[in-house]
Length: 219
Image 1 (tube, helix red, strand yellow):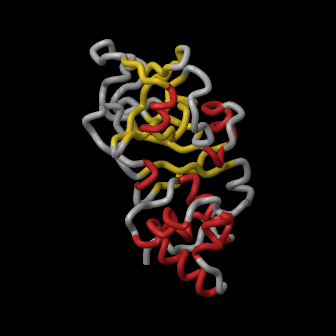
Image 2: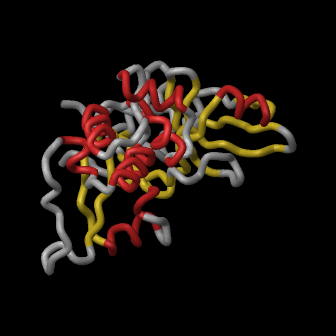
Image 3: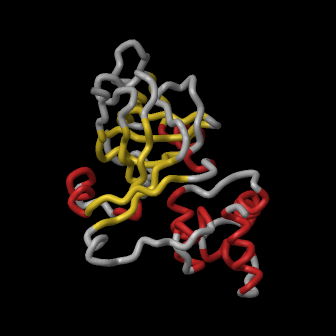
């Protein structure tokens, strides 16, 4: 049984409609219907909202198994983050969909870890992506993981963002210049280009702003 089948099971058991849950999640019925039929998958932040609305654990919703993670002396001071179970590339030739990935992995990290890598960021809005490709070198290297704040869905400050265009996912430095947005690759072999801000937001969906790089290098 898949994740949305478990959602449907709860709705039937509690005599709730899909439309009522869609309203509670502040999403349109067509989007919710696409999740239920498997044509699309909810984003990681939306999975958390579904869990909250249905009062179930993410572990149960994703796997069908009870979440054994409980507050205890061993787990006190730890939080769980979600990592997309897909290849996410800074190379535009590779494709991935954070908000359509069929499953995620759970990572248990300490509050101290969150403070170190995300500052004052809310752990419920954080997600981890793996980096493949070289267009953002030397800032981001192949094999790095990046921590993004999924609450950031607009380009308010000059920073590095993960964003989606069509079925391509990009991790690029975005910079506002007057009414334009410059899309910058830190690797000089890739061309910088500008897009009118309104046009950029029509064609792209911001998935989050990068808050930290988690480097892992083979020995």
